[in-house]
Image (cartoon, rainbow, N blue to C red; front, side, top):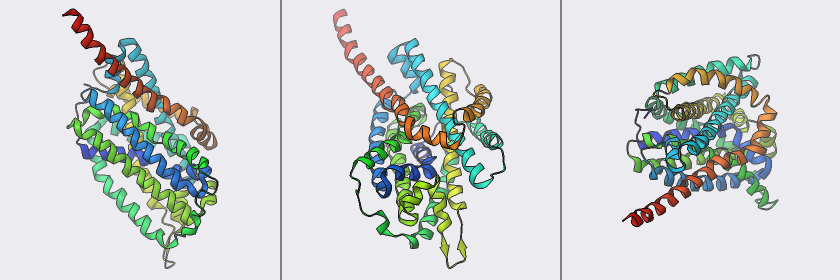
Length: 371
């Protein structure tokens, strides 16, 4: 196996939590309110419920081959060449996702924090840290997650406490004014981003030291991360309103602008920025790590670290090509991403589970005939 590190269930759960919040922390509230308006919190709840259901699918597949990654058992189930072909497509999915996440980082920093800095410089600086994290391996990344998880939670609680005096419950009313359809459409976007993306954790399943804990940890990390996004979406609606949340690309960041404690503690949006930098670092590093590991296994390499630098250089270029501007990137998420993610997040695991079941049922019959 190319990765010798082992992580425990708690560390795995933290990685899933960070991945789930990741880009969603800033982008999900705007995406949800664009369709569901003041009912966006309902769409978020529905999306989390479906996302948790998907973890059962991933758990079922991961437990079948608890000592193998998705790339390895794809070849075992489907045969060498078909398995490698599907694994190569899976690699492109994780690599494109990494490129889009890197672009999210560049767009946010270049528009909100350092508008005069070239986006390519931001990408290079951030990716250097991600490449270092990937080279150190999964075990080191998981330990870093354990250290930074309490920081994330404390910052979120501070944001919630400071902004709670400005909550206006009437802003979420009337409930279901436009019916259930906008809520369903909005939740479908939320399922694709981020819950269908959780399929990449099937590459990390075999590195959990107690395989039986991996499924439970995946479930825990998913619902905890989903809860954070639900609360942030509800806060954005109840404080700044659904219309304002829709008009802003990063409503949860602008939410922190509203903090005002006795005309002394004001504009501490750094709370949201630090939370996002923590979670987005882990999401990008996990995507990049899975990309390098999967390609190394497809090519039957003995070491995945030799791919870190060349793939990193390609990723910088791809992050610009895949999303030339912010409007294009948002359009991709709203119109294309869920459909694309369904291919790998739902249909691929179902195909592998179905073929594995067929192989198990056929094998005893053939053995019986030989006897």
